[in-house]
Image 1 (cartoon, helix red, strand yellow):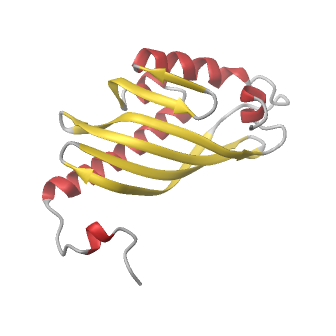
Image 2 (cartoon, one colour):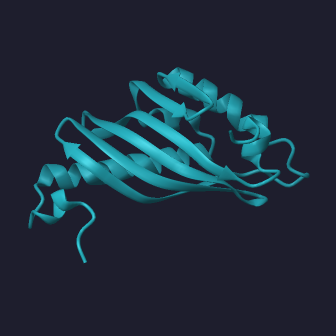
Image 3 (tube, rainbow, N blue to C red):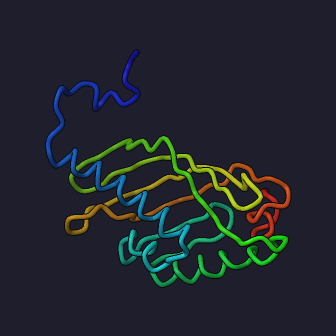
Length: 164
């Protein structure tokens, strides 16, 4: 069976900077997810560079941390109230994070996500990410979220309408 990333398979050892970068990128992905699900939007925005971009494909794009907080704050509360009286929550599960390219100055990664709310599965899709090193962290320069599908009556559907 061959390694899906031949650039890694061809080497017997990875340099320390690369191992560190990969782990810091995965940490940023997890920190973004946990902060968003906890509605700690300032913490989520801190996973981006100062001028970072968050694009929800086909919906909206925000550039800069303040704009990201404003966009997600508006979107996050839009569909939550119509929940049949049950407490609202949202949980993103991110899987198959693949760092496709990595140099000391930038990285590109892809991942799948699935989102659950009190009704169960809500919507799912893909992330396309660009990361850059900032100090001892790797932050998102750009994240494009593409929703592939959602279930009828979902929070996503109430917030954004049907998928085009």
